[in-house]
Length: 462
Image (cartoon, rainbow, N blue to C red; front, side, top):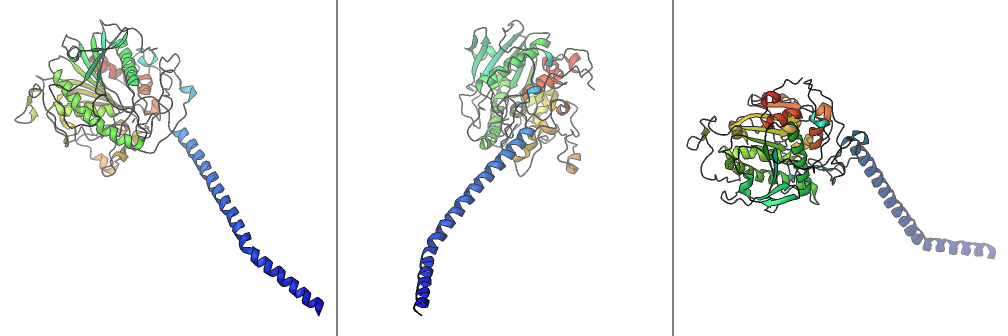
């Protein structure tokens, strides 16, 4: 009995000891499991992030400059999710003078990537036998031939990014002229003087630092100079579109900022109304400023903005009737838009910028139906879900086809003034301005159109 009782007592003691220690064992085990769960979630998150980065890298091409500060795509841009792409080494252009230039990243709708990848120059696809300007080795810092071209920067970067009106007597633009020694401050009146030269107004896109914008203007000037048959003056409107820490919010803000810049474009057109010839070029969000400026200068209005004329309406504009009575007496602008971050319906009858077309003699639109940035243009306005003209071309007043297929990448019924070319099959999935310049086989049409060399601009293109 004693042995039995001793055994029972011993078992009881062990049981009590085990029970007493059980909570501590259970707490230790739970802690280990909890830490293991955290580690597993962390590993899973890292794995998912790596897979997403690999997927987006394969879909989004890197490129330099533009874009959209807030909208008009910082890169037309837009506030969508960000994508980081790796450059394709096989797409480099040999002897590209700007391949070592400052690189920046393009985000979502108008973002800039770590490098601006430009595919190899295309061949003479237009069949005209001309030298394709994309094959030219261009050095943006080569000496300018002042007898042929002048390059000016008209800057609003020191001014507020958002505003609703400007003083027509003193808009506040800074004028700088490109000289052999660099960019020199000059008088604004000297940039707008009427000395018989053709005047070309250029508005850059989103996410552009000032130095990048200047470089882009010089590159454009090199393309123009190689084809121009007469002197011209290139005026670049340099607006605040640098990239901020919050790219998504930036896209929306830059879209609005580009709309504000339309007031300056309208003012410039009024100041240049006595010039015999004026052409305009806009890329991405810069196209929004161009079409808006044409609209303002022609007497149009945009809700939320107040445009005050310098001292009367444009020549040929009847302020009483609100229409262009004799456009032949007023300026007839030649316009070119590249990857415009503009709603494709804005130039149609009744569109937001439609009135500007009344003073336009012709418009060329280069778009890309494979543009990964403008494909998401609809996110700028989740109610109307607009389609970008830089992704699908402009639609005209008769564009009822869009009801059946609002995402069509084919241009619908358009004005006879508008010619549109899809560069997507050549330049691929990119929103790079330089890719259009270097690769698109229709870019020479844009150059000749801007220069007023209509015999070349009207060449047949297959």
